[in-house]
Image (cartoon, rainbow, N blue to C red):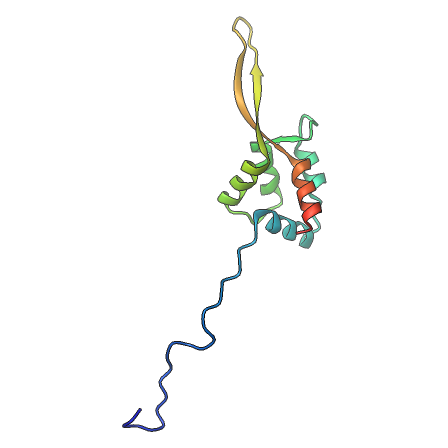
Length: 121
């Protein structure tokens, strides 16, 4: 700058450090998407609830989100499953064999809907 008086050299920046905005939670993303696309999540989950127990298996939950093309990444779907899922024993009986029980993850979609409506994301 001393040799060329009108030369300006940009440096560092102005304004200092700004905290990045936090990423939206999976619930916020799902709520926003459902609102923008007129999707009633309760009705959607009822359609996929084959046994009408107000519970979805992990497979049914994933299928319902895929059906509406929800913009959730795999880790976000897993976060929802972890938060709203619970283990349930699944009994299978076959002729001539003893009863087996397997662990099955089920999602209480009413709890998910309640969180969405109470937090007003």
